[in-house]
Length: 304
Image 1 (cartoon, rainbow, N blue to C red):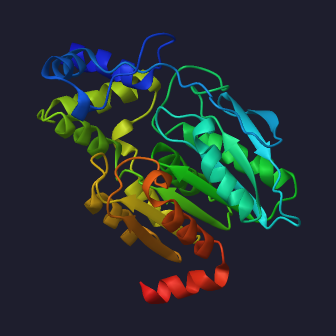
Image 2 (image 1 turned 30 degrees about the vertical axis):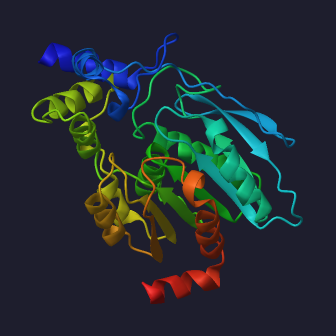
């Protein structure tokens, strides 16, 4: 069991240079589910496609790994601030182009970031947000170094976890954060992946988390955004799809309860662990627009 967990953890945290991605559990045949359970999932290294249609600059920053970013100036002048966008597990900065476009239309510059192992950034590994938190800090410091005072952080899934850890660890002074579907703990989200293929989580989920941490040099059982939330006092918009099979509503409620500052939770009834713009583009845009207006944030807190 340890041998299986070791190789499974390696494939989960190391992107392959070739091959095709393993389908979602619900789309796998029985033999495919067994193969994924025994040998691990196949994850090709995420590549950026497409690129922004508007003018942008490519920037490479030195963090714990070299990370590549796209900086786009807002077409609204004067701009209201800068939003830094962080993708989820198995994603890349090109997956943030649609949301960056909305932030642009609202009057914000945007910085789209490739975490290590993805797109134009260095390496082929991921730590599901743990070491990526240092890259959040690096991107934040770069924007602050340009003289920007109104900095917002946006993340989805793993990107949300990385943002929350960065604020917990380094007390980043941001104007606010928008986080989509962060998991409560790394262990619970690994358990969910076993449940999705109708396989028992015990004891393999714990072994997977243990070996994944050992291989990547950190204590993976301590990677808990629900705990990080207790150190977050900046305004926070938490977004969640009610059909999410990777993150439970209970995890989301715990994170929301632990947040210390102004906050609002918005849920989308028919959305799963996916890009919310596919089904709720207008609702998402409205929620984000109102959050970015300080007077309305106070109204949200009173309503909740």
